[in-house]
Image (cartoon, rainbow, N blue to C red; front, side):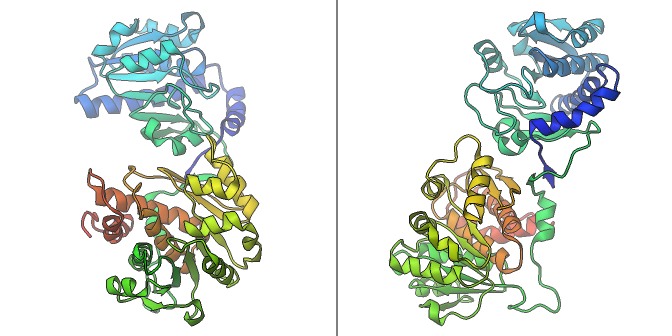
Amino acid sequence: MREAYEVAAVRAAEAPVLARSPENVLMRRAAFGVAAVVLRELARRCGATSGRDVVLLVGAGGNGGDALWAGAFLRRRGVAVTAILLDPERAHPAGLAALLRVGGRIGDASALPGADLVVDGIVGLAARGGLRADAAALVTAAQAPIIAVDLPSGVDPDTGAVSGAAVRAEVTVALGARKPVHLLAPVHCGRVELVPLGLELPVSNLRSLERAEVGALWPVPGPRDDKYTQGVVGIVAGSADYPGAAVLCSGAAVAATAGMVRYIGTAKGAVLARWPEVVAVDDLADADRVQAWAVGPGLGTGEAAVAVLEHVLAAGVPVLVDADGITVLARDPELLEGHRGPVLLTPHAGEFARLTGEAPGEDRVAAVREAAQRFNATVLLKGHTTVIAAPDGSVLVNSAPGAWAATAGSGDVLSGVVGALLAAGLDPLTAAGAGAHVHGLAAEIAADGAPASASTLLAHLSGAIRRVRGGEDGSRP
């Protein structure tokens, strides 16, 4: 489990360590960790470290000090180091003295074209907003991969928001603890390497599931299981005129290893033609018992949809509501007052705005937390970085490997996957986090470097599940 901590919590944890440590000891420890990451990257990219060129982009304050001390350690390993000081009068004095003492140089933008790596030490955790023009010009001029010290400069550490020019790092070295930015802004952070600093931190309520954890969580039948004990999920989606949502959602539940999938709706013929293992009926009144419902994709927004929501919300089992179902709830939110079991809402940004009355904004975690508390439901906000919040404020973040799932119908696939996990007994937060992880992985496998349809994504779900469980690579369905 990757845990992230807001800046205030990290500062509070640092305070006692700083109080009992000699001056600059914690900074030097952090810088040593940064230098170790830089050396590994140099060896990987260049085959050697000695004689390679590293340029430091150095701002004022502690972040710049970390970069300068890291430069001093790199010089001791034979790396040529040039520091570009954005504010020379405010450069960290001890760090600068250490760098110069071992032969580091002070330079300007002319040093950037020859660099093998660039270290971003421009701004630290206290900064907000985009980069100033002089810093942005240096970042633009950098041709080598960038390694960011603690966070990519210009990205908000607590929200991951980018409101101006910002660094896009190849690697970000998180110092002491991961911050929200490391989970929420993968495009700017790149790979995140954690350098522990001995901080005593509480259990965080902002987390991300590791792939191995998703594999361990995924339901696997035992010798005494049958189709009922593995979980029966009910799908209400699509229509005779628009059967695609029903086919995708039902098929995803089948692929996600639900014990049984019951489909209810007028797309019964299309579903059975593609998935003969599904048990399908036309009306809810004819459906047998289920352990969870997934409703909404392609359902429509008329009175029939309202009746479906009233029925499933009163059933006392977990209910996932997506797409048209969310539109109905946005228009008639009192429907949620009658729910007797856990509810999971899975909107994209537009549906979230309809449901809550406003767009998620830059602080997506805060917005989703507020919605979860307001509706007493777990809320999954879709996006390249999926944010999932439970009513108690716990949040899971899932960053997809790419944006390949941004295609029509992929949300229907996600609903089927997560519905199957709910039926298997996973709580809504965990089911949503695990399902989002496998969904993003399946999209990556399906795309193979080019856009892929939702049907192709669905065809690779089984391979994605095998991969998270440590089986074959999942490259083929």
